Length: 440
Ligand code: SF4
Image (tube, rainbow, N blue to C red; front, top):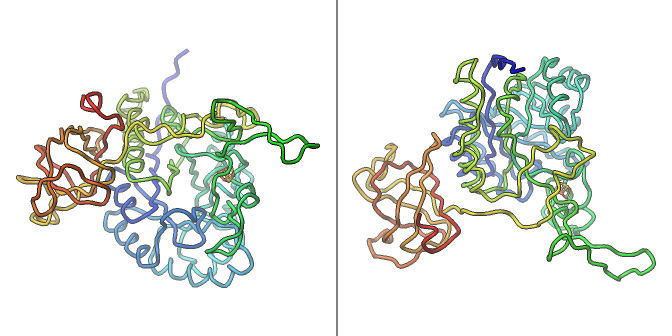
């Protein structure tokens, strides 16, 4: 029997990664309602660019000028020496009026309540909240929003969301850990201590090197040093390597559960990932809310294309419909990413155009910062926030002084004409295939 879809009470927030000022701007341009970022310390992505104190201030200004939100991750599990450094940092974040602190450690929660009492608290997925009683507990501690554990099934999320008086957030897209809620010591064990933290590269301090993705073998107990290769393919075995989460198909069903925020993983990913994934989920969320209560949610081909054209591992729905104990469909047997397209460049404001204009190319040449090697003859795709793309055959280009170039390498700025409007920070992608196939 076909059941009519339940009405959606309110549109869920789209929360994208803001690993740098550039990516934060791109996330907002392509439809994020909010971004999450981290300072140089105390976030769980130590290898991401992250924002220094001035950049955090700028990020907060950018977000608020656009009437959007910024949440700052302070979600490491704090060690004793960190305790003295955290209060001034929390006070600084309160001065910036960031919209929430993302925490995992109860000790940080206590400090945040004392030193930044005006900033709402969001609980990180690392805190491993798996039931409604835990939700109630954290609510009693002053937490406004909880990102549920990634191990939960659809049925469990529905049960928790139905009872919760606090906001509920879930991850809908991005890399996953094989360990339980990221509680993992593989990286700490397998990497020697090194700066900047002076401790080993522990995932729980934000310095995971992802050894779960490495190629693994077998050693027999009585023959130490003798390595027995285990081969899933010609390159080895990747028994701990998880596929990437993708819940695009389930956005309609999840929105009906009353989830408050859909979060995209990926503070270490590049601008093309941020632009493509954000715009795909933006349209998906808008489709649920705007298409009337009787219209069924349906995934569009161009949304899927966007997710396929970023660097990713094969996708899975994670634990949504399969128990975390039977991870078969979540294990990826290759170490390499799928990457059919790459970021060709980003549109920059043209110096001879009005910097406030949304169309720096109007009536002239556009300025592009190259991010992968370009030669004449490539077909470029300019991405728009509404999900559309404009195609441009790059027959020639020049440097900023007007000299014609035969190639351009990353970080070079080039100019050329296009016959459609563009905007600053617009992402341009190009197929990794060269030759005629790339020019279709
Ligand atoms: S080693 Fe792998 S499973 Fe462990 S925390 Fe890092 S990414 Fe997650």
